[in-house]
Length: 389
Ligand SMILES: [Fe+2]
Image 1: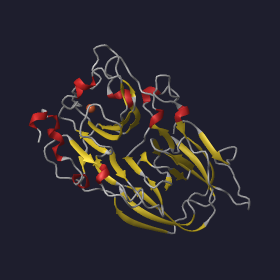
Image 2 (image 1 turned 60 degrees about the horizontal axis):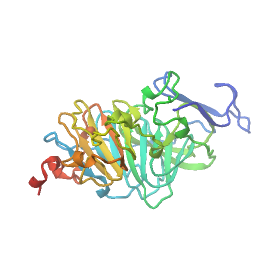
Image 3 (image 1 turned 90 degrees about the vertical axis):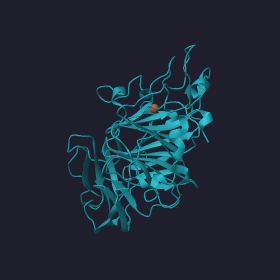
């Protein structure tokens, strides 16, 4: 999506004859969004992508939700959830609404199938692990700190090459883009953007597979999971070009915007999605006004829910937060630093915190699965120390 890209062999013009060595036509496929008005790519297949041997319904993707109680601040320990399964089946969903679902995965098994999310773009944030995101658009090697942005309709498989893989997964119902305010009229990232095109990694190697056999693609569509069987490898593309393809951006390449006094969360914004934003809190210099308070002020996110996923480092405004913790500060009630954290931040010159934030503009619901790993006393953690147990 960030810019025009092409890999492999293409005919000189679109929609003209492009022949295989045996004289038959390559099968041209236009993959476009928003009808034919959004971004698109054109792929050339060895086989018609329509040749499906079998179609089956597997399961509903909808996750059971908790019965809602008092609106309150929540804290979940994602590292306590059991590891296992593959990168798709191993997803544990924590928070969901109509626009976004936030999950984690700690997979141990390889995917014996390919996956495609046809409901919206996905972000896989790689907390731990290395490997290759294998896609119909080519390979994208990944490492810790990578945001892997996978557009709607992209057939992929995660080839994990580490003992331990931990992912934060953001499933959406729409398109993920860099923040519009950082782009000029043709989409180029401008000078005030905290990252630029050089920081964005795109598929460089297109693997064209000609193997025959039985290959399964599991497709999430209409919030249900389906299975399709093909007689040929789904990565049978010899060339493609366009704006729709997966890309990677590493959180370490986010250049923080700092100031003499506290900078608001939008300076950390990394991506925009439908009714939500994703922000990166990265190691940075603290505010340098002589009277600055580096910790944030109390704030009421009046009409948005704030989710933080803590990656590493000591998060400046919180206590009792672990690596892999998710906190939810919902709309309707103010939140802010824990007792003592404002005072403790004064005079500090730097933070090493690393966290991913998702702010949603519609309320999130907590899943039933999340309740088993909740720190129930979190809401009381702003009370003065002496009243705590
Ligand atoms: Fe906040």
